[in-house]
Amino acid sequence: MALTLVIGNKNYSSWSLRPWLAMKMAGIGFDELRIPLDQPDTKAGILRHSPTGKVPCLIDTGSAGRLTVWESLAICEYVNEAYADGRLWPADRAARARARSAASEMHAGFAALRTHMSMDIRARKFERGAAAIAREDVAADITRIRALWFDALLQSSGPFLFGDFSIADAFFAPVVMRFVTYGVDLAPQLAAYRDRVVGLAPMQRWIADATAEVEDLGDH
Ligand SMILES: N[C@@H](CCC(=O)N[C@@H](CS)C(=O)NCC(=O)O)C(=O)O
Image (cartoon, rainbow, N blue to C red; front, side):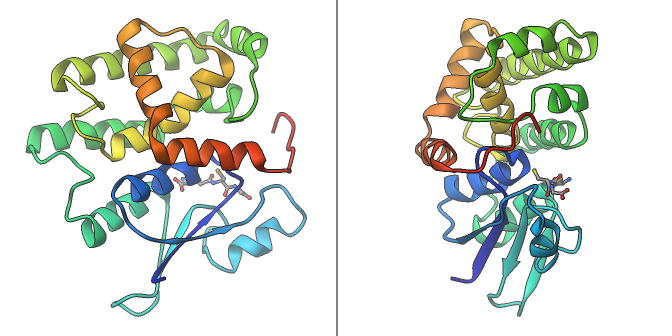
């Protein structure tokens, strides 16, 4: 296959999930190369493919020769342009601008949430979640995400943040999984959005693969 997506553990690698889900939702065919994180040979293994030593990384051996694309958002932009005819962003320019803002905000922000509620798909950590939410910085991140989801769903009427599934939804998919793992309460319309994302066939595949993985990185 022309496209290979280099990813980390499905249970833990939130950045890998984003382009993987976007590509699956767009019906793009690709091979996966999984490199387990936090092993003695992880860095060297990833560096064989990715100049940053981080996953995800996309290798395209198609028409342009061998092209390496790194950074999750850049990978999503590339596949959207090259393999999805732009379907991974809303057709409406204003909605597209808002969707890009949301994905960029996720890419650049929510550090407290990412630190104190790291993705651990197969685990249920409600006590740990309650302790994290008691922190002002984590609570502020969650408040902002709730507001962003609420406004987006209200404006688009759903079913996804900006209407049809977009890169913005792929970017928030790991947050959805964190809210499940850490038992974060959501208003009914946000809970329905969370459940819609979890219920997507590719998400169910990713969750099943994550659950079947044998590596245990503890509270990484
Ligand atoms: N900004 C990067 C973040 C990538 C990232 O931090 N990936 C983690 C795994 S989720 C990684 O490769 N960690 C391995 C390491 O740093 O050695 C992106 O959006 O792709």
